[in-house]
Length: 446
Image (tube, rainbow, N blue to C red):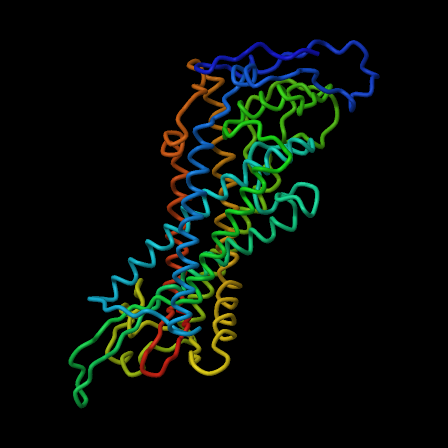
């Protein structure tokens, strides 16, 4: 068996990817077949794209995430030390829209940090699976696919920890900035409204800790004993890298068998006239799609329950509002909700904070994991498009700037925008408010 000729970095056709000589003895033990190609850094860079630019971008993002998380930890510690566990720094607002915008910006920052650490963690996971001969697909569910070994940074234990940290990072971001609305009353008349925002210490400290731990785990996976072959997301670069480093084993009598026929026996087949959908090719795709539709049904049911058994945020205003006014995108005094209130004073303040954060995290967790799993669909579609372009008359341009690749992937952009936007909208459905008058916080489901 011999390796293929070197593909060019510009226009490239998949037919030049790999050519194996005919196997003379079909009765050999094919499980022991391995590629005998000895690689060097020089030959590797000529055979496929190492994509060191993506490496620099990812590490820069992880560094920024580490700096931001350290600032959050320091600021949260200072607030707790000066104001107590239930303390917060209050600032005046001109309108309630300001705190809504601040929440959206904070969710966007959290997304940038988690995506940077997620990229490093996902690349190291792919290399770990390849070293174990378990890399069946170029795209895998980062948090739900694990390498062997409990102590492995990409193992089941730390992948579970990463999932919890990802959920808590978005949950704590919803608690960092709380909104206070005080109504000025003269007799029976409302003469004005004053708006305040509060930056809370304990959730800010938790946000910094979760972001920092994610960065540490991602860097641990990068610096593990497994070598990262390429930082490219292209299935062609990954395939050539696996062959070049003897981590890919050809399967005999499987010519023109697709990944959808992985469990089908019967020898080689003729090329299919039509390509099977990702639904049939990738077994995890079906689970992800069903899970996402389950989230849609659950959110619709949540809204219906709140409208049936909920009550307005301020009693007495519902009589003056039409049914259409009760359906508002941003929380208002007449928005329907179901809530509980507890006071941020006494000896159980930290326990109350933990109870509130854990309660929201349990409900928000499926949304965070669902958005994470949706990356599988977009990346599989991206890989399929690259294969189609490579088989076209113009071929596929192999070397491309990672930023250009990111901005030219419409589905990837949709998912990137949807993550902060949907978490922000989820934060709106939890109307987290505070009051300096009676030192209380009121999480509300609306």
